[in-house]
Image (cartoon, rainbow, N blue to C red; front, side, top):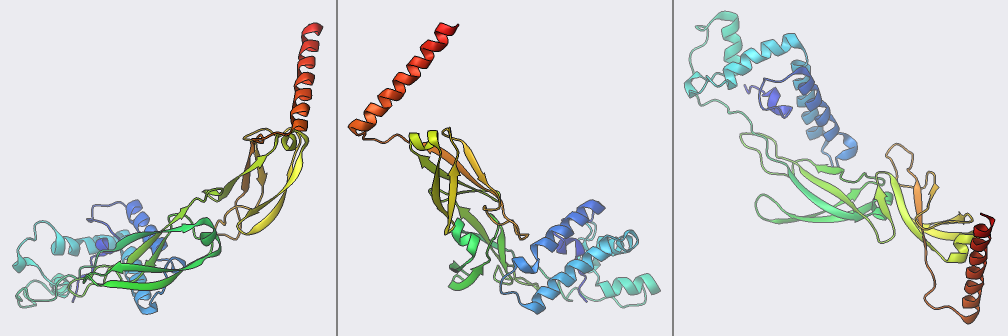
Length: 298
């Protein structure tokens, strides 16, 4: 009979941990193995993983059960138990606890070994903001543990958050002694585009205005995430002003969206017509006249 190492199942190095550490480890694993974050999940494998995690947490979160389990854990994995002859199966330990040491005959250490879980493999894939917003099919090529190149297609769900990971069960490094293979984790890196940047769930873009548009106000049509929007530019807009459109940003994963933030930039035409030059000169003169009036009034 295999003695399950509940601490290792929860990713804990020893039994010298607090109840808060056990709870935190459990919550991280529960989130890590959430069905929405696991693509192409084999239901039987998925259920078995969660069964082990929940079984470990139920035992270690109960002080009474934890004390009983720790007694056996120390005998099976404790530092003083270095000799192979001293290691006993869980079945032997239980019978000794109930009936004494003489109940079972000593067995040679050729029984089943502790299963060792394979290591996870993590890789990254870059996608655009638009692909992340709407979802996209991708193809990934990677080298398996035997050195062969594998290729498979998978779906990136719409509204995935930056640096989220998609998990593929059993595609990591091989386990030992009957342990499960590790998983392949694909981290999603959402890349900014030339005129569209992502910050949390807010989107930032920039709009250029001619001086008279900024001064007098105007309307502009912009395209963000394949959606055309009419933007009202108020009078006396300056460079680096930010116009905010609610609920037109990135998805937050809960059915809502962030904001679209439009940063203004005033750009003077490189070439001015004679008429434009004359108008600018008139504006300049008006400004000088106002300045003189203010000085005279003081």
